[in-house]
Amino acid sequence: MLPPRFEPSLTANMESKGSPLLFAFHQNELFVHEGEAMRLPEQLLLNDYTHHYIGDLDGRHCFAVDIPAKEPHQGQWLGLRAAFLHLEEPLVWVAARALQILEWDRNHRFCGRCGTPTHIKPGERARECPSCGQLAYPRISPAMMVLITRGRELLLARGPHFPPGVYSALAGFVEPGEAVEQTIHREAMEEVGVKITNLRYVSSQCWPFPHSLMLAFEADYESGELAPDGIEIEDAGWFDIDALPTQPFKYSIANQLINTVADELRARYPA
Picture (cartoon, rainbow, N blue to C red):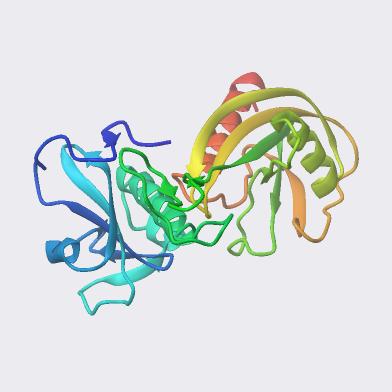
């Protein structure tokens, strides 16, 4: 979910109210300095680095900048998950947008149909093939997340690549030909062996790993014994709302979903 103060745009419609905010990435690592991204010299925009105007934050122009090599500036290069721990929430989601646009640009410099080098199409966030006319827009992959409840308990699980001790809601990508609701029922059965009912939509959030739109739902447990698949899920369990394990980082939709539902259940089932 983009912060309310951010206005996305292809071009700057007014002068920046301050120095531009440069969301500079080397591959998938963001340059961070003293709790902010972007404290790189403005001269970067005058060099041969690939850059895209992405909008303004409180009137300040925002650029996504692709850095071919890590420059020796004062600061550090961090993967986006690590960088999220150093940034305030408005900057988190602008950085996520910047990375998604750079990923799109890197991956579509040649036509996927005929192999011809592409160019930016004027007036659109798209790369166009001058030979066959193929257009490539930034890709968005729909994914779902579901938090399953059973009385005062939440079903939480962890994947093999999670940070130590962190548990989250179930999640997975929508497959071709599937509705999101079908994905949720399939993933719940495949990953932990349970059936669910009373599915309710909660909210959505862009998730730049690398280009997802996460749709979050709540559901009630219906039947089945927990049986983690051992591939996507290494451990899963029912956790009382007053004894929850470590959750994903605070700005994530998973964290928001877990805490929102836990608060609802506390009101519904007083201890």
